Image (cartoon, rainbow, N blue to C red; front, side, top):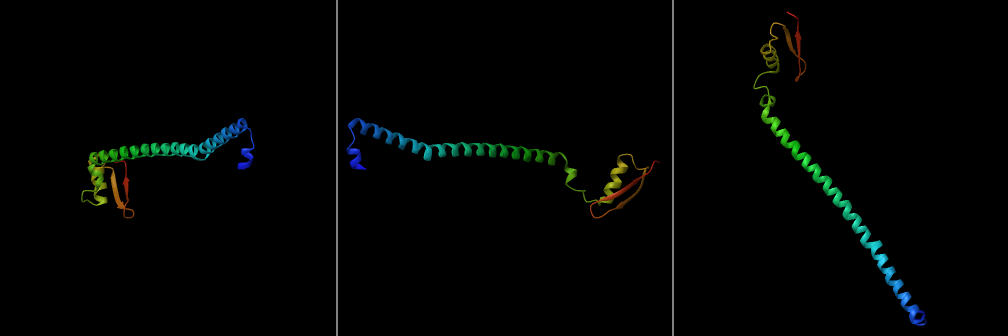
Length: 117
């Protein structure tokens, strides 16, 4: 290879040298720079999306905290049974005369009968 290069005219040697430099630059761009640049853009896009998700979760957590503070009755039945709570809620909302029966339906539900009275 060295002998072949030495056998060329000086002008041809310059052309081959310039071509080799161009080839090296092209390979550096194709094998190093372009993948790094594309990977950086991908990572940047993913980070921005995850930031947006984190902001959304933070806002949801703040909204949840505000709702918890506004509705203290939703935290429990205040020591009353579910049957007693259903009965007292119906009576306090003016449904006492129409309330005919309240009975449990499983451990977390009640069935209420109302009649036009």
